Length: 116
Length: 117
Image 1 (cartoon, each protein chain N blue to C red):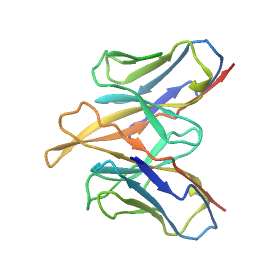
Image 2: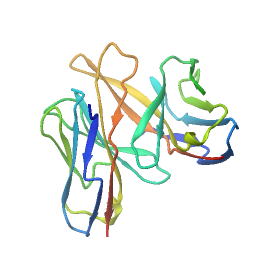
Image 3: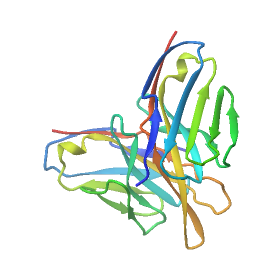
């Protein structure tokens, strides 16, 4: 069980370039999430997918697009990278259930992105 | 949107000391969670609290869910070097869709903990 995996681990882009961050989970979870982490700001939700075939905007979606390719994979795309998108990006997944008092999100190791 | 204020922003302590950090919110959450992030890794869940007033322990960790559902604290007793990392509080709100309950997290800014041997 690898849990949540992310590729690449590091990436440097020039302003205006595009790229896709990949995320996969092997826990058969329905829900997947993309966050960005910036110093002093915690983790902020970019997009989430409650189930295969659905995606919704989070707190900071501007400049990003997502694709829920199948139940395992959830990708994040930057169409035209900007220096303000320099950040650490985390993917997470969780199993939603009406029987649990809380839904634990499991995080990947992160992608460190620098936009010059 | 909801805002969580976590304090302190950073702590520098000696091994063996106790640590306390807290989070406050302007609005109510169903659940409070505490995560730890080791350097270069993603956050990992430490403790989950889902009853107002609840006090929960996990080894050297103790956390409480405030009675107003707007705050929580985390205590670490007898700190050790491997406690180093960033600690995040997170509030979880549930919404229902198609008969299933979904929980979105709002994170605090994090507390950076440094433990000197």
